[in-house]
Amino acid sequence: MPQNFLDLHIVDYCQLQCRHCYLNKGSTSMPLDMVKNVCTDFLNTGFPLPESTIILSGGDPLLHPDFSGICKMIRELNGRVVLSTNGILISKVIDTFQSSDSVQVSVDGDRQTHDSIRGGGSYDCAVRALHLLQERHIPHCISFTVNQENRHCIDHVINLCSETGSYLFNFNFFQPIQNNNLEPIPYSQWITLRQDVLRKLEKLHILMPEICLRTGCIAGILGVSILPDGTIWDCSRNQKILGKYPQKIREVLFWDKIQDKTSRDQFQTCCKRLHHE
Image (cartoon, rainbow, N blue to C red; front, side, top):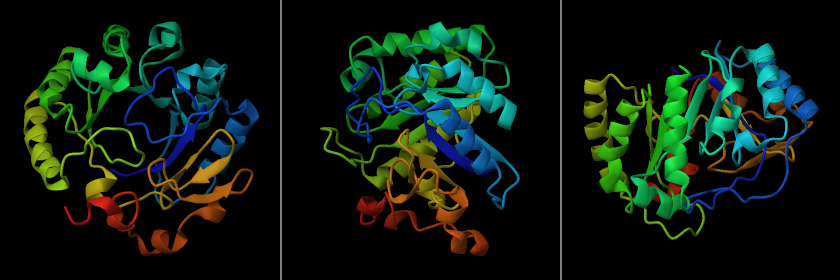
């Protein structure tokens, strides 16, 4: 079920140089008062759906100098912590998490392929993080971005989901937003692979969410992305600048689409390169 979302980039840097990254790295951490103000504004915006999710991302959000303080604040505002991470620092912050949280760890293949895409040693860190989250009974999932280089690793990562007790497999489609020396698979091939993956996951009782690539773009309609410097994007992939903090989120949303209860055509936003495939 779709929810109102705030993709909050609390840092714009991480330890890795992932070849499929679509962000320009910097050295900025979002101040704690800005985190609180932005989240409060988001939760009071008046979205049409009752459920709202604040997603901590980056860069890698675990690198924020006051990560535990941000988690405490998010729980007070919205009940639970949801984040996406490369997993490297999970062991250092594991006591910060609670059983109501949700942690997504990125895995892009077997050891050789993942490390080729993300950097040497990063696969073992991600797998250790998943096992540690499993041991601590912290709900967790895996994000996998498929491309020509790692498509042969799909079954490997599905098996890793099962072995580590991951409740969800986020099967993403690589889109070459920047020049990063990775080749995407054709859109039609992704659809076929997705159907096969879904059948395998159902047998393992692992979920796979619908994503905007299939359902239509809800960025700027049900939520936004906000960078550490306050830039407001419709989403992290399309990167259409809608405004800048302290501008109110309500002022930059696509209210015509909200009122019509329709999404944007995804092939006119970040998926426009896929339209003829």
